Image 1 (cartoon, rainbow, N blue to C red):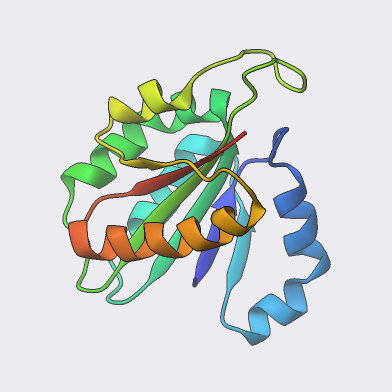
Image 2 (cartoon, rainbow, N blue to C red):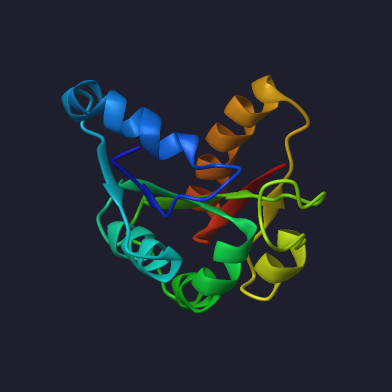
Length: 149
């Protein structure tokens, strides 16, 4: 991954705390972690990164943010990425409304932008499916989502 971006919000806010804590190590690996002003900007950043051959970019936000990013994701999936480029969004849903204001189902939101969704059932599957999402994105030319709850 060359870019990790997004907008913090529970249940995925810790991603950005970890990126900040490990920023020197990430830069050593060639990973730029950049907090976006909002989810729409994060989607645009992922789409922009996909214009670089071989680049892999990820955006992370919560379910409410998927609504904010929807136009950017739809535009990204209508655009052609550069060869070998990939984009993944990780969306944190909170169906029990324990840490966010809306119990949205991001599968429906993401379907409107033609974003395929992978749903891991445990921590090992999160790791495995993020890798698979990048591979699927490279092959299909689409942004692919990983939905975590």
